[in-house]
Length: 76
Image: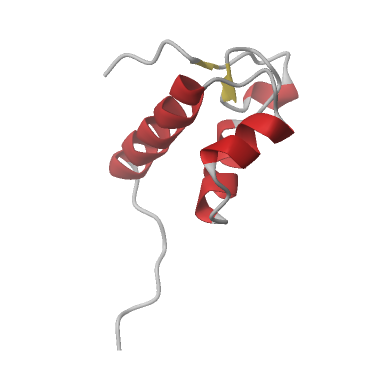
């Protein structure tokens, strides 16, 4: 999968994946979505973002989770 809106620059925010070099981390966007903020609220909070940025941030996060195993609590 090719990501056109996600950038990684070692000289910017320590190489954290960002949206289009805007210094807006993918994790921030995904966290806002997880906090149930609407697309409109997120775009108002970050006017430089576009709808497609939100979609690609989620796709990137999904791919990142597929690529590594995260420690989880065992189901009861």
